[in-house]
Image (cartoon, rainbow, N blue to C red; front, side, top):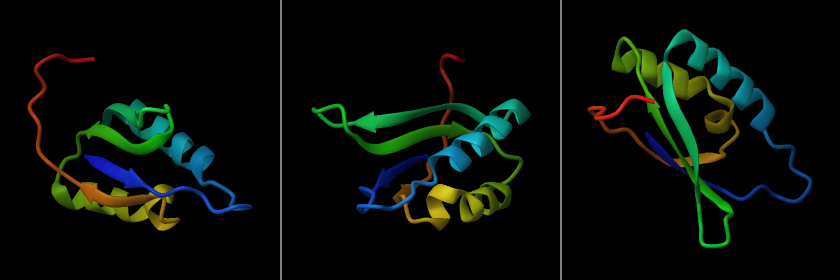
Length: 89
């Protein structure tokens, strides 16, 4: 899954800590394989990429619908594609 992010508005409280806390729980449950920020040439975050595993597409969609980065509009232009891992983390 990849997601393009928006820049926070001045004075806007980012949902990052809640998002990362929930991501850690999903990692411990085995749903998140790896996650990373996508950076531009100035090393500013312009997106994210996650490799995730859920029992079903419905479970994935439910998680996405409730993730703070989605509900607060940080993640935009989300793309979900199946993958086949060649090397495990």
